[in-house]
Length: 77
Image (cartoon, rainbow, N blue to C red; front, side, top):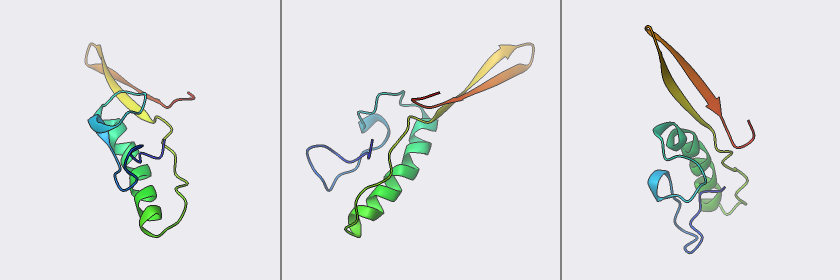
């Protein structure tokens, strides 16, 4: 959940390279980038990595008749 590589502590992963249990959609990479940035800065400054990715994603769905919907979710909801 910290987006740090398990085998190399100086590597952080995002998007298709990650092993997070969620889709590799653009919205997931967008929300995960906030966690990656915070943990990368913590690592550079020698602080513990406290940010955890919660699986935040959203998806737009065309429902027909010129209408649409958005779903916004994470690992819990």
